[in-house]
Amino acid sequence: MNQGSISSQIEGVIAHLTFSHPAGNSCTSSMLSELTSQINQLSEDASIKAILLRSPEHTAFCAGANLREVVSLSSIEEAKEFFMGFARLILAIKNCPKLVIARVHSKAVGGGVGIIAACDLAFATRKSSLRLSEINLGIAPLVIAPALIRKIGVSAFSTLSLNPTNWLDHNWGYERGLFTQKFDSLEALDEELKDRLEKISDWSPQAMKALKSTLWESTDSWESLLESKAESTAQLALSDYTQEQLKKYKK
Image 1: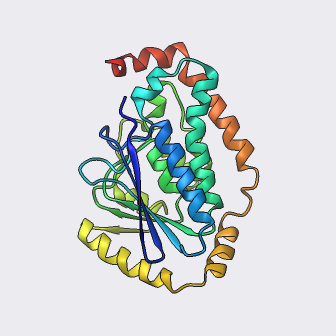
Image 2: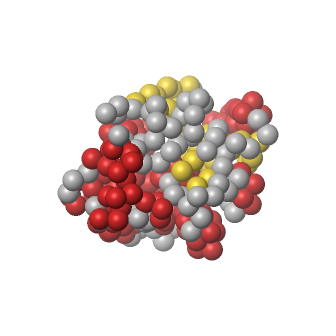
């Protein structure tokens, strides 16, 4: 199975992290682990002021969990460890004293929507539609729920998670606060993003750290909360219903 890849590039005080997988930039456990490790390392780097998350533009921004890997999970412990990959990534973004920014060029599904929600800022094009398809597979978007509810509220999360076959467009995401800004083209997004990153480069890192700490108040319990969500998701993933739904991905 293709494990995907993570690449990093430093431009001045901005770290660019690019995650890539041929299956819609979906996330394997190794990708989630490497992304988490990179963000944790950059958190300790005093020369870095912001982290930009992006993916190759030939396909979706992120198709969420890599279903070929989900299909291969054979025990509760193994499944929990896989979903803990998303939990640890969300926690790394939350705990990072730098701003973490998502460059969303296209569609996001499942865990990909959760990654966007965890980021401090998210810039999106009109192609950036959203979908949580988990309930169709007999799973539920439990691990990413706290990040999404924090960002868009319970009502919007309910709308998103209970419409597993419908794409909600970039306007929906922008109006509910998931997207910081929306753009008609990727070129316009990159132009604004370049300007925003230049401004961030001049900001006080101490002030940004203090502000981010304030923005994430009341989330001290998330480490245990997300672990419990990962365990619940693991149990659902190995249920008879979900295993039957996932058979088509075993080919």
